[in-house]
Length: 263
Length: 340
Image (cartoon, rainbow over all chains, first blue to last red; front, side, top):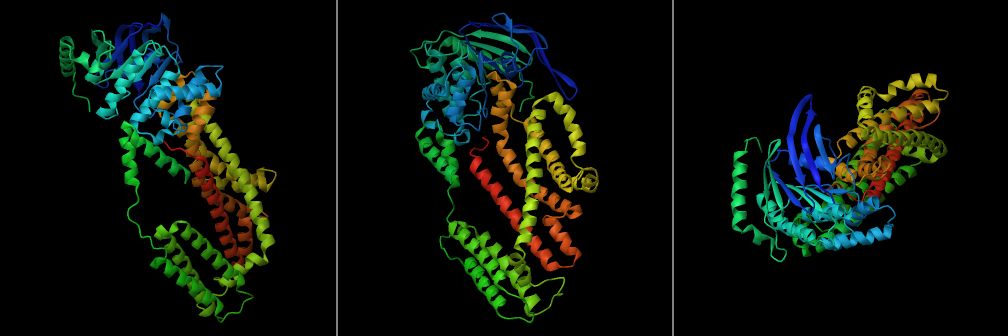
């Protein structure tokens, strides 16, 4: 059962001989079974947090641990969905998914992997597109395949870096619902917890169990959202009085932390 | 045709799904604008009238005597046949097809009329087309020997450079420390024209063949290496990161992610490097070879036999075109996907 902990974490990177501090004094525990949304302005370090959990980068100081073991590097116990263009363009949709299965499940035959991949594509509503290359798919379809590919790994933690950021509102909503359905379907759901990066407040309010608000380099607020009733449509919870209050507070934070440097 | 079929198939079912608007729109934009569907367009008629004029100009006796005009007519007929084939296969909707052939026919008519009928040109420096094209049937064995010698040389140098350049490029590009060492060195060495090594390499290497292969190798190797290193380095991080998350080892990463990712660029690179390699080869053959197309040309230039020289030049053109067409075919058959 994973529990991700950031302890006194600092991260800085070097770009053309200058050192930039991206994160400092980060202390955060992501509990088991939690859908956590990292919210903040672009450039505040949300994606950096995600890369640290993914193990794609290493902290400069402090540590990130999963179940008290420091993260050594990327591995199949975590899976990731990026904003766009991260599917393998030389593989058809089915192969994109089955490749992930084959590489993370030694001993699985090609036929078994294909069967499972088709099943996953079916779950994200992409069964018909199994034999198409990514360039033949629209942005929304690609992200559906990317989610299927991330599920294929059967990782405990799913990391999502603004996965719906490039999509138009209607498709975005559809995919949010899809993601929630997958998440709520605990029996079939592969991941135990999810970290979702977004700068869209409404998206965070619909999806999250917990919202962590970041200003550049720091975490400044931590909100716990009321429990979701699986029987109700996801939008129902957003209308609760405490949620409306929370939204106002987050909007306020957005305004306060606006440095005016964003595009 | 296959990719197109797939695309339209993709779109028809895309329309059914709710988030297919983007793909559907792109295809609408792809719908051809109204085209002239007549088979025989004015430009086609002009080109064919010129063809008949050319044949007439060849057959009508001029002031210069020569052996036979049959090979020249055969060559013209081959051009016409290729044109008709291309035109009827779909080139009909590309007006450029007719324009290109028109230019070729006009050029041949001017050459023919000026050299044989009007005798306006210098008889030695500008040989008559009948004699030039007669070289092909009379010197077939000699030409073939030189072409095959050149092609072997070419394949050895070109293929080895492409293979070594890409394999090293992938490895060097993937390992940051190696890349930081090799890349600056490559940047210094790559711009030196390979051809300048030829005389020296002929001295130090045991045979001319080896020297020529090595020169072609050098000419192609550096640019291939540099291109591949840059492409690997500038590869989309999200693709690399997605692959890394699967916990792949370096071998799988190189063979199953980098190679397929790079393949279209590598294949398209072949088309660009082919003419460069051909140039280096012909030039190196002009130095010290005893066979090859470059040798054929330089040898007859020394004897002032310009009829053979021009035939040799035409031969090189034909060979390069065929090679280019083959590479194009390889790309069309093997590159099935494009970048997103």
